[in-house]
Length: 352
Image (cartoon, rainbow, N blue to C red; front, top):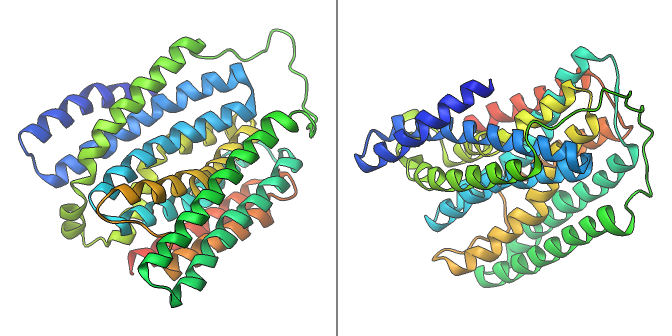
């Protein structure tokens, strides 16, 4: 798989540049751009996995979520600049659904096929449950309820206020987890046998360099990917909602998808859950609020208001993940239930 990703990068990047210069078919370029971004995301995943081994599961999971979300953030900024507000909100909805149901489901399912029962930190699971309820159910549903009687200006003021609160609380959560309460809630881990310590694929300096280069390449390709959405949507009969929720979300989160599943297969469920749930929290409490604030500098501002199908889907995904993961235990059947929910929602959004 790593060799395949390398081939896609070395072929995809030159083709992306050549195709954009000579204005190749938008559909062909859409496929090239998506495959190139997924391949680059593979390098991002490998680099963050190396750093996770060096720095520990929590920091590694945070880094993986951050650089994985950097791909989606870059795509969203260019879409926001192009005035595609619907696609941006839909892609962030898709990121929440994808991380909780698709990534979480595949991690539980793949890991569960190899191990009868897998465990992860119950303290982190309960902490994440409260954060998910706040970030999605409170911060997203409240604007939808109150903005029905507001004009555009008041709606935007409310959105900016909530965005600032979300960012402050997210930073406070990082302070809580990595500084003030670091090591307070310990999970019992089986000690690693001498001589079996896992070694990183790349040393720290190389991993950081690859992260930087891959992220820069993703930024270039993403800008051109956004320009193909209208043509491709018309050609395949895809709505903005479907493009954002399914296509952009899967492409934008490819790094997290791959890394979380690999970690689950290696029985590193703390890292896998941190990637799936931690990435969701980062999207809802940091990436989305940042986009709301950035939109103030573009021609079209983006209020923090989703459609009811988007809201209900996100709330349902959050409640299902909390119910399944709150015991700090997982198996393949629970993963299958999460995947089934994702497929049902995907079909629903396709027909909207």
